[in-house]
Length: 112
Image 1 (tube, rainbow, N blue to C red):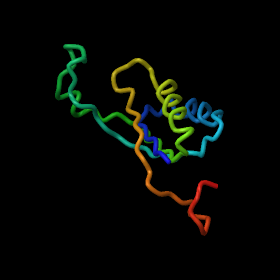
Image 2 (image 1 turned 30 degrees about the horizontal axis):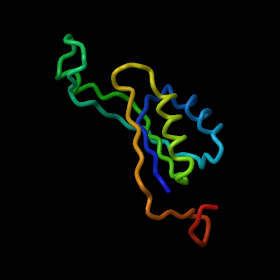
Image 3 (image 1 turned 90 degrees about the vertical axis):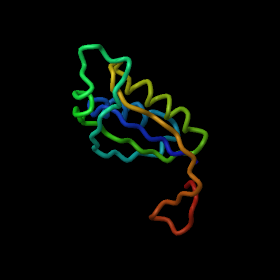
Image 4 (image 1 turned 90 degrees about the horizontal axis):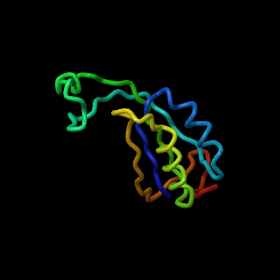
């Protein structure tokens, strides 16, 4: 199993939800409101001051999905495609291995 996490702009959430629900095998997701700032970048326009970058806490959402290996890459790609606006600070997507997971409502661990 894999855990796919993403930090994205909130205005992309409804489009992302619809795009993920359309994927076969999509297991659902957890969404949390977060705030953050990006590290100073060499790619930012010269008129942006480092102080402004460090104190500009932009609202974001964190999406967390635990999915079977066979759908994890498709979920990763879908998030990357849908969340992109082409602007600095669009977010980040990453995948981690999950050693073990179980649905809380079940008495035995497993994928079903």
